[in-house]
Length: 108
Image 1: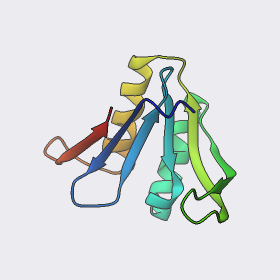
Image 2: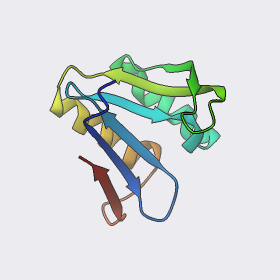
Image 3: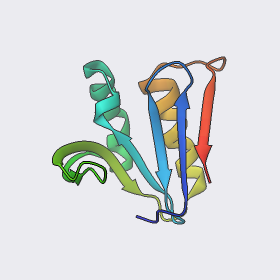
Image 4: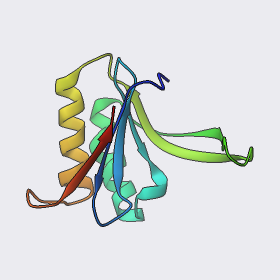
């Protein structure tokens, strides 16, 4: 993962977010921010894009402890149109946000 480039889109008043990383755009939707119904919606809605939940080991840089993390991830090979479609799908269909939802954009 390219640690120099990232964008996190989150709802201002909740822990819900999606993130994109790297110059070639990597989509990441961690399971830990999803309710069970949202997880099932994400599984169904992201499957046509070839995105399935994947479990991997993650080492916390602060504590050094390793744990299992599950996330929907996919390299988008720089496809900004696909990144936009995935963001809309997650924000408006998985999270059920609407056009008036206040979003916060964090990135570089």
